[in-house]
Length: 361
Image (cartoon, rainbow, N blue to C red; front, side, top):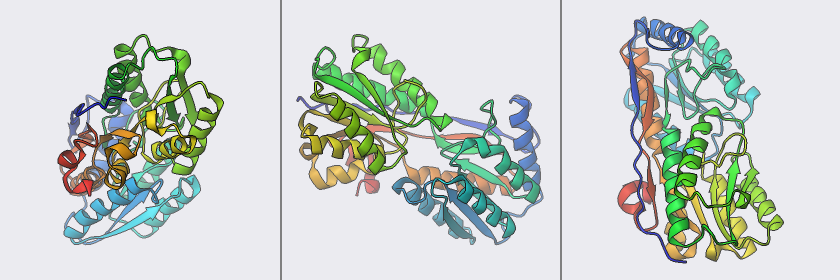
């Protein structure tokens, strides 16, 4: 297959600044929750030493490990202690960690929640204890989707658009749109609302750029965000459709039958391994999200040695650092951003070192 070089899409940074005194132009429920948090923070002292908790839904995954390390650096530079907690994708473990942070009178909490339906419970616990909380990656939000606390993460829709554009360009440049042996495999999860815009972005741009790509050659497989389950899900679809010899694959999360750009790269690495096992990796194209595992593929195998052809890169360091910086603004009673989205860009084996810098090592 012909290689596609340097297709790059940049995502914008979206920041909505809010003040400590109120949020009149936001939904009432969101404004009230955030204003209350700010009121609690106003009586605090950001310079007083204390403990910051980082409670992450899947703390054994590379993304969250790196995010936590970045958060820890900022916290320790400010003279505080950082406690990293892995909730193991278990709601009970997660709530136990929140309760422990409250019982230990945490100075503040940054967190990625495993089940967003628990958001109000978490915010209420923190509010009652007077502990500021900032969400990272997945928002703390109510049933209407209004944010209940400041959030730092990625611009999901723009990232979806970037992956959709890149996949469409690859399909067209390699004459795959009308190739009956080509299929699109979408690894999905249905539980995280922040992934819906990614689905919309990718679907909108892929179908807009490749309107003739048949819907019957788009396949969907659910997984739980881990490499092992991504491998199992991909293997199942690949085995069930021996007529497909050239796979386009992207891993992530979403709802319904919408194609989705990835929520992590663990699933896409699982797809890479499934394609290798099936002997189909030579004509396959897998696109990751985060590039924190794609870069290991490229470092270890080179551009020709893997079917991971691109990944949307955004820095876990930026999310980790940004989340605690916002937290300290809340603690200090300062004006803080209600929403902060980090930059994203599609990288390839040809461009990742220049774009990612030290993160590419």
